[in-house]
Image 1 (cartoon, rainbow, N blue to C red):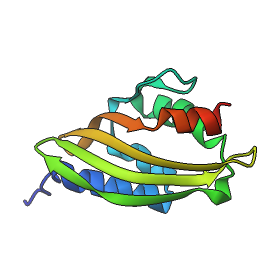
Image 2: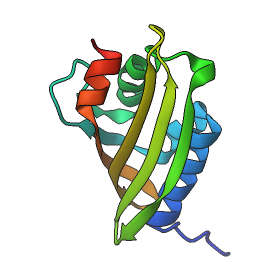
Image 3: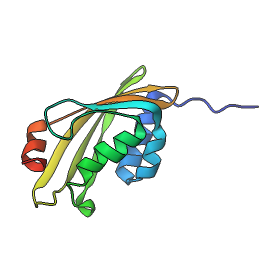
Image 4: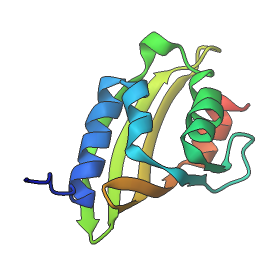
Length: 136
């Protein structure tokens, strides 16, 4: 009986990013370990560390997307660099806030992938832009 090989960390993140760009939020949850952590460092109200797919999507992602007009959101994937279990992904998130401001954010995240699942993410972006547009 043949077994399906475990995808490489790079393949996992590429598939995750394609799913993100497509907007398939339900499928995005399936990429993560149950105890995954997503960390955004900084002093803004919606930054910190979330553990598990439910916290990531129901708290962090919900806080960020609630500030944007859903139809206006565009995600442009730039690419990845991979070494071992770590994958650096780069993308742009654009949209219109509910207050009418233009959000144009360049994001970088280091994904750690183990056993074909995302184990941790450390995301970095322009916190001054987020403060000015989202939290002013």
